Length: 509
Image 1 (spheres, helix red, strand yellow):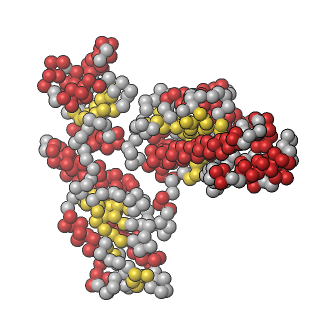
Image 2: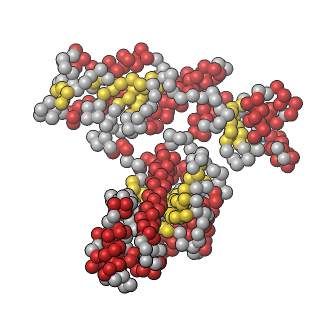
Image 3: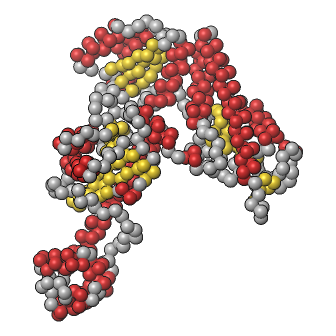
């Protein structure tokens, strides 16, 4: 560490409080490397910067210490609070040097497959389906299995062992035989009648989960006060997992897709990006080229988290030739928002740039050059899926399963697909049009006149010799020879891929 940096950290350590809290170790880019708790923040943090102790550290700890360039601390009132806050921050940031916190795989969850016409309740250990609703985790299998049996008797729902059969009238038979657990409920029900049962069972399970959470919190605090920190840490893991599940729980709805609508993603994205309003309209840009040739760009628009393909745009790079993603991004961003400004149309709530700091800076420059006020703007760098801000904020790495990150990835991937499709079309068109170079006697000017008249090789192939002869400089004999040339077997095999659907045209602005 540079001497000035070491002096700065020593001064910061000297001013630390001596009470309990949590500390966050950071690297030179501001990325959180490690989160830890302390009974005495000053004493604990200072141990990281004492050269005399570095020899006894394990290699992994020495590697951590070598990367630390700064730290933050959060004071709390008690060790038990520090314990809980440490767990929350590790779950949120997933620092690379924290290895003690694992997922909830050792605990059981109750899953309800909401997309099914007749949902079943089943026990699982992993969250594998974001479209289902989960309850738990629950640490003890025995009482949980009894709870499921109680659900079946009390609410008339089915478990994983049932195979409901559809009847000719649209109703469903839940069990082949009328089991004892359903004696107070009809075995044949309509989907709406059954969903009422599921809704009541979910409310019951949610109440059980919240009751379980309060008991766990009390037990955790008690263990921490008795200095049984291993037990307290174990209970903390369960508390955090259960809190996460309850946070993700959504209300059961008669429309199974309603829970998938992206309002929650947009609200979370607004929060993590520090925006003042929900980004209902998002536009994303991507650049595509092959070693600097066929440079193109795409812009896709999502409204309320859904693609708005009528607003997609694609661009050929005009201002230069070659490989310069920064200049290309500045050009297309400037063209897009100059045009919107000239037409008096509103800007999107958020602009997403496929790229890192350089692409973001170039995009921001486009607004400044045009004297336009930029909307909220971020970059999404591919390697680590890092969110890059245009201001002094440190880059942000969200968990891979974070809904806001997944939304940004969907938008970025769509922009990437759209740009690559345009690039491939241009290359295919150039390859097909190069066929005319093999026709003797057709120079550049007459070739340009032919393509200006028919606009594509496919239209030219469909033309008759008489129609070809209408082009200036092409006589009847040349037209007949060109028509025959285009329909030789070798040229028929060179048609190239056909466009199956209509894509929005390249934007003129």
